[in-house]
Amino acid sequence: MDNILAALMFFTRLPFWKIKTVPKECFKHVVSYWSFSGWITGGIMAGVFLCSSNVFSIGVSVILSLISRIMVTGALHEDGLADFFDGMGGGRDRESILRIMKDSHIGSYGVLALILYYLTSYSVLSSLPREIIPATLICGDTFSKFVCGQIINILPYARNESESKAKVVYSGMSIKERLISLAGGIVPLYFLPIEYGWALISPVIMFIVLALYLKKKIGGYTGDCCGAVFLLSELSFTITIATLA
Image 1: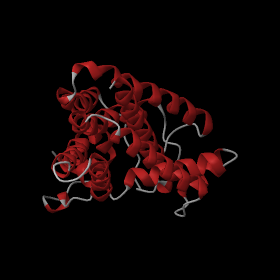
Image 2 (image 1 turned 90 degrees about the vertical axis):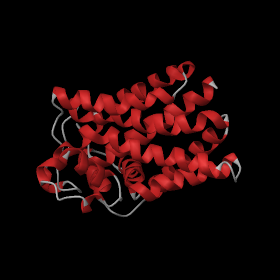
Image 3 (image 1 turned 135 degrees about the vertical axis):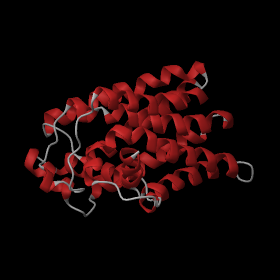
Image 4 (image 1 turned 30 degrees about the vertical axis):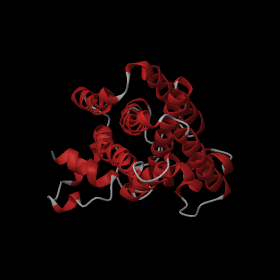
């Protein structure tokens, strides 16, 4: 429970810290429980869409659902996406990429990445049939977090602990933690109609491509990379759903 609470504290802005204080060591295992935070963020997105779509158009409801996750997470993953593109777009070597990614100022690559990401997300989600959008939101969130969480098992951390923004280096998953992460990612798939099951391949492919790219460019991953890989993998899931629909 301490590890789950640590993950919910780390990946959301909700006041889980009021429940109890968890040991600092637990925050090294938050990625193992990342998919469970998706039950909350994806569930809130789906709930906001369901409620608002009874009053507003699909387009407005999609915007409100996207805003809800930004508010719940404090734009944690979006910050990673912007830093990722700033670093990869402006850096010439490993050291410059890591330096740019750590800079708190956003650059032109980061701004363009966020604009294009949300334009694409809005356009694709709005094109879906109303009845499939809630399942797309929650399943894309949880399954993509499970897939992308595996990055800590296949790549080393690109910085040392003192250079980390969060001041913590994630521990690789044990077999038990891998199974827990898997459960968090696949249980919500119950809501996804079976004919859309092919969409689950897209996040896996996107993850593999980005993991190979990170290994080549910086020899590992950072927290910003985790956020970027998650959002891009989730977007590939949503695009595939739209293609199948």
